[in-house]
Image 1 (cartoon, rainbow, N blue to C red):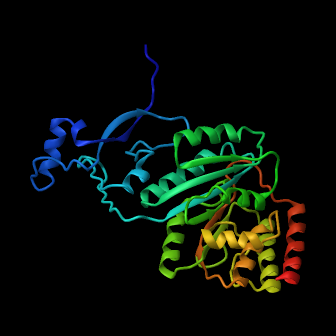
Image 2 (cartoon, rainbow, N blue to C red; image 1 turned 30 degrees about the horizontal axis):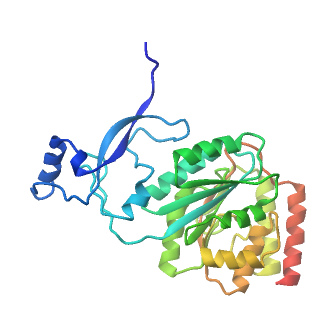
Image 3 (cartoon, rainbow, N blue to C red; image 1 turned 90 degrees about the vertical axis):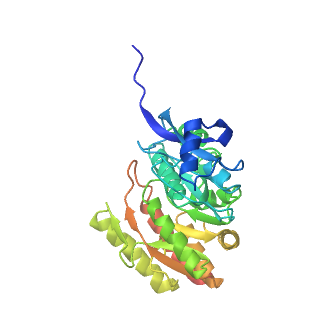
Length: 328
């Protein structure tokens, strides 16, 4: 008996010459009774494919990995029997680069990468993910390499030896960014990619340099924290707001969309290396005259693993606020 292999339906790119006659007839009947599809067009047809161990694709139709690169080059027609009907133009789109610093995120990483792929694909956005791993001992790099293969060319892994800090991870990842917008977020699933389209829309509508997610404005919130941690976080923001007057409601948040050129300049001026890195970047950006907008987000405590925030980070934060007050 052959072992059971779970299958799912995916799309496959074909040219008109590769399509069966029945498919061509169906396509022509649904496109003003033309006799043949144009030779410069690509078609999608459904095929059954085994699940990739880290693809996390659903049971419905999914777009091929090479899809974003192809649609930027030519018009695309989609099999009319498909569940979706999308139209794409030749207009060059912006590209969004996500920097994901990781340390012991073996179980979270496949989920967040799959969700990012889903979010960008469904919203027709060009994208890439730069995973920056600080020598995780839990096998994060093994999983990351599998994700690189599964989502090529959209996922890139950059490794570093030792736990070198969140701030330097962003600086390191920025060297490999190819997009004109950069998104920084946590890899532990605390930041849901579903808010990215809202951040993109906000940025486009107002031409902002930075769009930051906020837990403390509008319908934003925090879930999964006990009362003590909520009070510590809220108190930290109030303390920073009183001392620094940054003009944002969530200075300690780490879910942001930057224009790449703005982020590069802000990073050059930022001196912090640890958890105060995010805070200093925002203060520096405001001092530079950058235009900043906010989008309310729901922050959920990590799905797997332990929080990396401890007493040392709280002390570092307090010192960082006072240091910024003296310098900026």
